[in-house]
Length: 290
Ligand SMILES: [Zn+2]
Image (cartoon, rainbow, N blue to C red; front, side, top):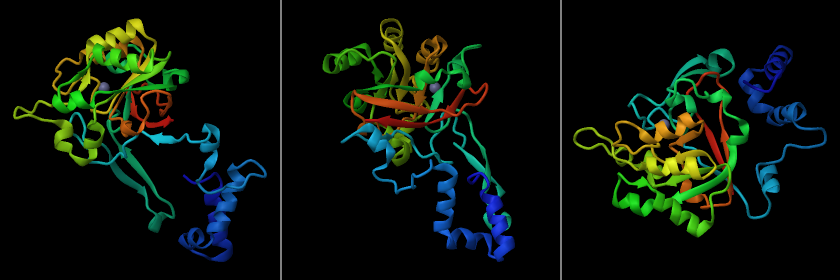
């Protein structure tokens, strides 16, 4: 809800001044900001506008924060075809003086994380994933040309070799992300994003199980990421890459957005993961510090 104590302050003002709650927020914007500032900002630090902001200062000249997250809406494409999210009003401003909703969603919806337990009986659930593995170097493997030519393309050992030849060995503890170009289709062309054929089988790129196995054995990789619906290609019926990768205690990210804006190497990925006990996955906010 609002900053702690905020609703009490509103109620007190309503009692004192007889103003409407809506009028309080609309008419005393500066007062509200000042109130928030005393509540959350360290003494002596005014709440400034968004730019340049502490992130820019922390990252340094010329660096930026890239949002790798799709906006989650009810009609965002899902693997099982159900709505990505639905809402029920629990409180509405006009009637209750504040807004609050209940969400209903499948854990693996929108831009989301697959926890190791997603494909294992007893591997780590979301809350047990070490935070050290959620802030990691990001390696973006560009397979857009191959995926354009073949929607069933699997990111291969050869794609990994080509990346390392150009950018050096994959950094320790990194996330390896497949950039297939499908990220843009998620909201602009759902038909192509899912790629359903006449039999209903989906066609979109994924990561080859051989490549995942090689990364597991030969490199130090915390997680895999794809800009499609699944680590495995859309036509897969048995999900071999999921089965190799997740039970090994690694995580996966699916439906990653804006990988075309991220550099091939040198960025840091921040995975904003809700800490939900026993969850097999969860929608995430992904930020690349580049
Ligand atoms: Zn998955």
